[in-house]
Length: 230
Image 1 (tube, helix red, strand yellow):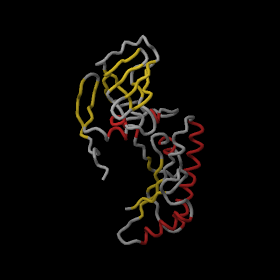
Image 2 (spheres, rainbow, N blue to C red):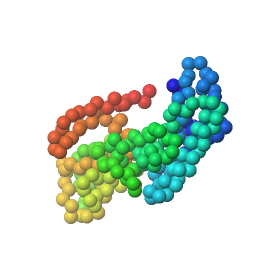
Image 3 (cartoon, helix red, strand yellow):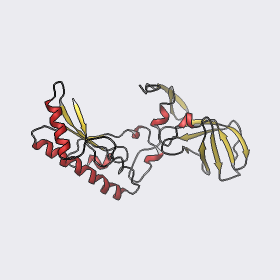
Image 4 (cartoon, rainbow, N blue to C red):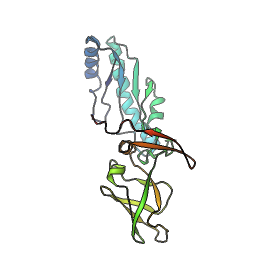
């Protein structure tokens, strides 16, 4: 079964809406060994608009392109069983749009600072435990987590529980902290949890994930994607 991706504005992957989408659907339907199942569109450029009303408006523009293409494909006599759209930042918008019957959020499982925008109900569920390895001044500290720990995609990690502390740079194996409140008692050996800005590019840097409930580790998950760039 084949899902055809339609470019709804992100300009990454996908055939163009309208006639090109119909032509590809026809080719798939006529190909031996292939079954045309449906279409998907990813409105990634619209899913991160901070204000909900503006995000809805931009997402609807994308969904119209998708659904209009579905109608044209169906006019050509091809059944469209699956119509997918929506990510973590737009799943609830896509779910309410007529004609869309599948949503595709991924980050919701852990949530991320990138998706910390109006209208998204998920809570942060993943963090990386780091250790302070140097406190050279009242306004600076160094942790043992850098680009090899968090990845650098999208943005910098944010502290889970501490205020007035931020990572202002990631080196390969070090994180450089800026301490806004010099009275904060932070010393070598202290543990600090940070939330990766984009968890999916951080999770695959680890062999396993510790599942914590309260103060108790209740499970350990092997990261099956570790090293699987092939």
